[in-house]
Length: 200
Figure (cartoon, rainbow, N blue to C red):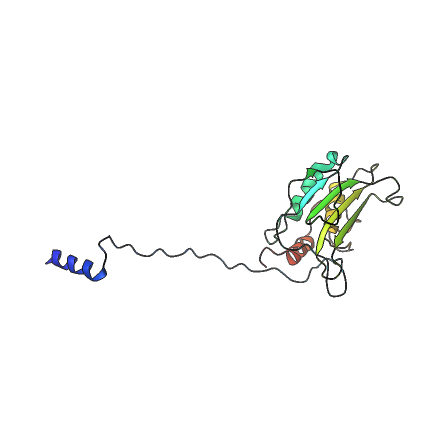
């Protein structure tokens, strides 16, 4: 009777293999966006469009001759800006490249020494960004360094923040040069996650 029942069951089901319970899909937490207003002030192309890097691959980081002695602090600053889990922002490993970005360059930050007379007296570092004035989409950025200066980690944190691009502030931030912070503040972390959220 048992044998006959098994045969009947297999015939009805149309299969002769051993039954296995369906596997349940693992539950994956929903991705919650942190997109929103930035606590830090932002550089704007116009009243409607603040400047920002479009979502995508990691930004390319290049450096010209003379920047090599500062690469340890540069990497530490890059790591801090990409440290929060709530941001997609990431940077490539810095690589040597003598030429600064051109109009055709996209998603590139270049670090270089200033040409003679390029920086005003007393300026240690300067940040520049290239962007579309209609949309605010950022194409590239540069950090330009006075060859006679010895920038600190605090300087690199602030200048790289300005090519993200956030504006200087009097808040508790690496964008406040008077504080000489060597670590991102909670305001800095909130801002990079608000503008460049890991979840769109």
